Image 1: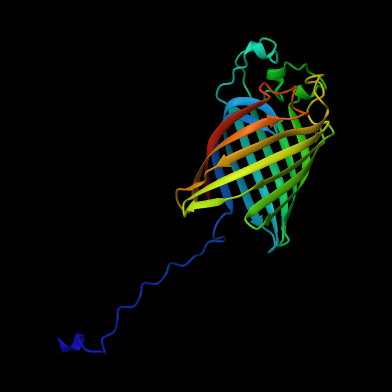
Image 2 (image 1 turned 60 degrees about the vertical axis):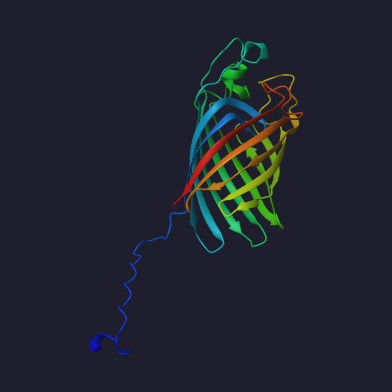
Length: 271
């Protein structure tokens, strides 16, 4: 018994940690799925009750430069435009689906992040053509695809995140400017409340051939929103939100509702 009781007894050696032979610690990827009661893009209405799936991958090239690759597919579960709107030429329910493919370079300058992004949009049911009844040809509402390049910037001032962007659409020669801000407020270690606001300015950006009374250029919209990210696990976050789209000069004659509440939820997983 004495052989095991004295100070000369050794503690058992700790188990060795498993070796990490992987090429990367993580893939730098985010997979998201979501649902929106209304689909607004840059202040322009597209469809109701949309579901979507997106995948984004960030690949570090240097300590400051990274390459981003992304894909996003959106489709409507059910969209009904009442005849009283006068926008659908008698069309009731309609289909809408869209695929976005993007590639980007992001440079972290420390005080801000700058991005260069290229995006291809594929409109399988035409660009809102079923809503507006746009004829085939050069009308913007009848497009089946578009390509754009954008410049983006993101920074923070204290607790406030600021971001902006400029986008040029090669298909229609239109330009779009966007600025926004948000303020994450931590409620618990797993719950935050994030009020945000975004607005944009359009220059000949998706109005021609859709509605002759629409302004070809001007402010598009203001959209205040509140989201509530909930950390379910270290890698999974559930985010419900509510927003209010306020149509401005470049969108007054295009949207079925000039201003309205809408909302949705998304689940994101990083790996």
